[in-house]
Image 1: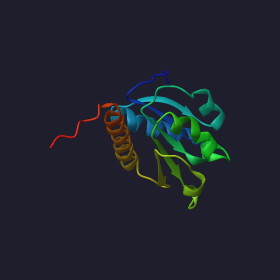
Image 2: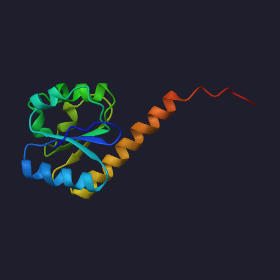
Image 3: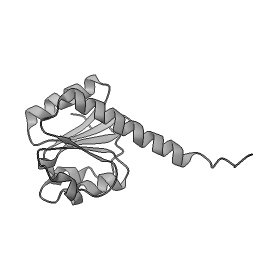
Image 4: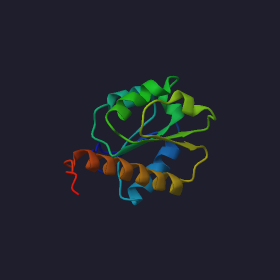
Length: 137
């Protein structure tokens, strides 16, 4: 897929090419541009620093150290939907902006959670960029 970045660009990281294709098609139907898919944490590292709206990642595509693989995304404020079949995945994740969805997760639920994560990030960005309002009686 062509490399597109920006306000509607979503990175897909998935270990199964057919699932990645299905997810990409669903996200494109919902109006998102797609970056990837990437199939390993090495490929994810090569995309560090791209302006992305969000990332949808299968935990299995991140390698054994999930928190290290997520760090470049979370530090740059990119919301991440992490799809995982591991029950204890939360203990490996540090930083804000990561939403864990269990496997299996319906594609509709992924699109919905993605929209919510991007909305929260955009609201936080607006709030932090707006000038402080003076206290008036």
